[in-house]
Length: 556
Image 1 (cartoon, rainbow, N blue to C red):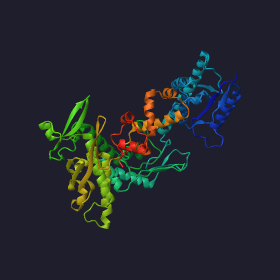
Image 2: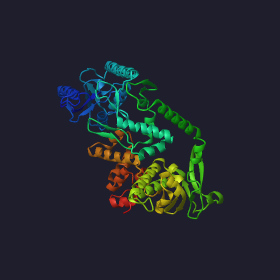
Image 3: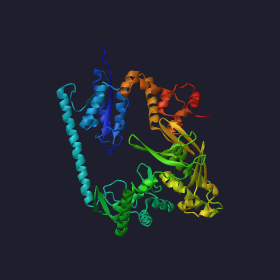
Image 4: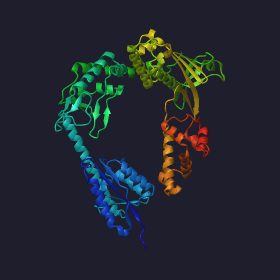
């Protein structure tokens, strides 16, 4: 009688990347030892699978390892009967994680073996031995981590730079044995300029805009692999991090304490103290006005909106399940009762749509150099750049930045007309008001309200891509499950492995038959607003792709 075939997968891991570039490294040595062990058990029906599951440079303290996740997925799909490791701590060094792994392996009828540690998990003594081994492995990992943390803390107390990406203004010391930072003169001027700009403007947004106008850039990092990172415009978050980093005062920070560093300072003590005081004052001002002054910004379009009858839209709100829901409502609905022509629009969606329409219009005008009424060659480019920066600011801050530019907004069925305030636009962009092109101040954008479940989505101007994470996840699952079924996995076994009901799995599977155009739109976030997963699983999809597209709102 022939023995059943036991499909064996070899898993290897190394905590550090040291030596992985060698022709024969630690992962290869582990794999070779496991392969020899499997060969010695050939008489028992053991057969090694060709796929390799190698995690190089990954700690055993976490289960979020690429190769381990692939291994678990294949185990769940029923492709593996035995996992072979060199030592048990290659699989995990955590007792809690080991319990999770054992549970998943037992659910899939999969076992594991360590080639250098003989134990049998079918007996109570074998399980005790295994738990003892894991306890020591976890203890070793925790002691090593404590030792490393203590070494870093002691080194920083001495003012040493303990590695990582150097901040803007500094480079690592050319001698790699010296854990010090050296000043990069060109970048140091950028740092000093940022501190001076904030001391002048006393506002992070205005500092960001001034830094962009002056062409200040973040630090560009060059890695040994050839990859490059950074070198772009500085965001407010990056500027705030620079302004609060004590390294520029010649100090090294460790947690909540700072120590004198071995590197020279870039900014003076006087400038550093001034900037910190301004930042603290700004932070206290924001906290103190959150419930007061900021409450006035809850309806930034107040007094600016009118519908096609000339009736103003009034901001209002309601409470639902403890949440405050804001709306803009035609005044006649509030004072006169029912009117089918009246508007009731969700405030957040309307404000975002208006801000998007303004940003798109300003960016397009800047790209066409249609900013000044009578520009010359010397003025056109700077004026367009200023309007482009204003458009970027509106994209970031949405209606808070866009509302101050608006004079009036006229709503109509299918259309949105926005008149911008000439003086406000000129002041925000730093341009002369009398020279702005009239077309810059007039926006005519398409306007649509679409129901999406219980939500009303508003689209004005060119809609921005809006990827639906739920739709994308369902589409990926549909393709993955369809491939599993094609490979011979039974529907019931697949549902059990994925921990979903067979009925749900069957409803999701047919998404793999969507037309390429619909699938591309879902992945790009350009699908119709009303296209939801709930609708897709309920609708009876035709096999013809063109008919699918017509049914789901893909015109043309």
